[in-house]
Length: 517
Image (cartoon, rainbow, N blue to C red; front, side):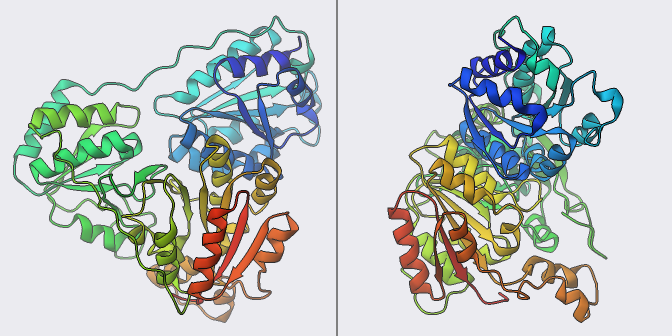
């Protein structure tokens, strides 16, 4: 058994049985070893950013890491944006980066680079497996490290000769650390805040946005009369009829300030204290209102749900105090296809247990409101802000969730970053519906122009326009083997989406929306 075979066997035995990859010469022994360990599901991506984003989506839904295999420093560089998103979302990923053979590094070949430095910005754990004697234990440690808590990208640098040399075989899985319980003194401190009667809000993030955490938080909210707010872009939010509904913190700083205005206490549950996404002239970066005290109930890596459940009991909140969203759907829309009728069609049709991957950006503004009473579903957002996440994350989520439909709401500009993900969806036979919200521009940047105080002329506006030439997403999708249609009216979009929900396999619908909202 060579090192690569022992490595893959160690990963599988530790529960990492899916690897998204875009390999090169230095990873060929890893690729060859896949035939010797058939339990490893290997998924080919045509671009490293698709592989890293798919690993992110997989782990969000599976609750355990996928591996990703990248080719040297340049391949890692191509995958950085979606590794950044995974880092910000505390997603566990085992990130394997091939390297030149140990003895070859001295020659500074054209693809030689400082992989560790490139990886450092997105990795919570980095190690180079420089010997077959330690490779297997390095792999086991990488898996355990990826869990954190909180979850993180664990990067294992893999020299080529360590793969082809003989190995002693796999090693058992390393011990995984579980989330930390919250101290009793912290619970008692927060309890006093809740009993103060002063204006208070609880900002939820991470695991607290799953069903058990939401129910416990709603019990607290109803009993103590405090507000609940979710982080702006949660990695995974369970929502829909039968679950507590809550608003997310607004993206625009001015609106977020309005949401938080008047608070005396802000309790963080796995969340960071809110700040503006960018700096703007004459707008505060720190969004916590003056006179408001920030309290930390649970940090990332703490048992947020356990803390909320214990706190609800300490407060004396009845077990049935949580307020659950009632079933509701909008009527089938008709007429002009715009952001509102687009959202209404989704709300009218969204099936139970669907996974929604949301990179709709400006054109998806109304979708959350129109789906609040839809059958329960998962909602996956963009925690790191690096666009081009939607199509890869939808791909990985579908691999992790066979039998569940995935709906990817994808802005036109963002789609062009990682459109190659469709090819992988066809190759794997994944049940993903991609809806392109085509408003022919980087609409969010048109909005940001005025907010930052810039004064654009025709050349500047041309840099935000996507009509010269126009993008034909139907033709692009068909070229990658995906069944694709175009909708120009609300009725067309509703009917095409209904067909896509009823038909297995990848589909794409290009929704032609007005250039501005």
